[in-house]
Image (cartoon, rainbow, N blue to C red; front, side, top):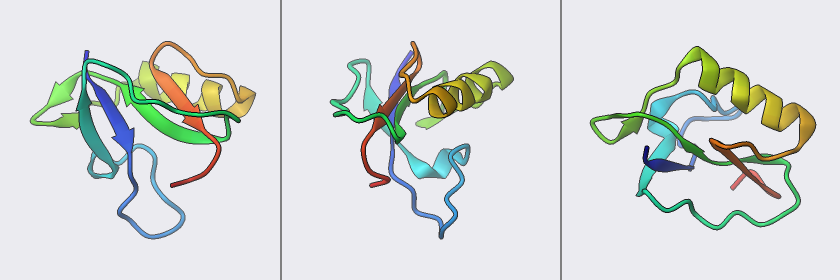
Length: 81
């Protein structure tokens, strides 16, 4: 599955499940430094260059953010942008 970097283009508060807030990176995950505070990138199935948000992926994103621990499909970074 491809990776997508989180680059919000909507106004605050940003919607982390809006496909338009993500840019296709490719099959290699981007570098996301610590500490783990905000969404950096996700790994998801592709729909014309945008991620598909399944219930499982949404739950994994919540788990990662709530616990401040990266998961298989969710990478975190220290700042929002």
